[in-house]
Length: 218
Image (cartoon, rainbow, N blue to C red; front, side, top):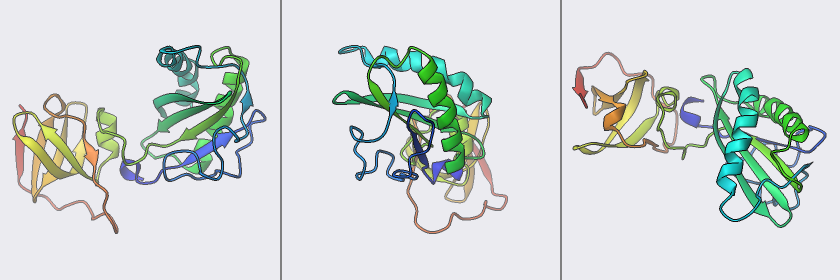
């Protein structure tokens, strides 16, 4: 699943069972058949204490669940809490070099549900936990994002150079290599804005053969 080309999503109730109503959500959000306020959720405590406090609570939740995600061999990409009446929807996005399968999402969701129900970070109201992989709209801002986007066509703003469109060949801790019109160009991350994956139809092309290389951003 290079570059988050497939989005997987799993939800859990308090008993830790994946909800059969929303096993896969490619749109990146709750299925229209199961609005958040009606979906089965875990009985816990309110994560949003008041106006302006959601961000701090999301940080506490992230601190509480990150060890579980890391132990599963994944990275915690984001934590978001939204309110729907007296219910809360907790969206947790995880990723790894191997991608995130539906089974992976369901397993992590069960483990996170147990940790959250045993702790105090979720407040007093019912909530639904949704664990998913990043969608293609996730901006590429970290080296790992670029590395996992290998083979994908991206658009990125380059300092003093405008927007560039190219296919990700490789990425390391310092720079990314893009194939731009048949020429491999190296860009230091410090010179790049957030990358945006371009949606393509059909199969991804194979890695290009050895190409001339140019260096940018140094």
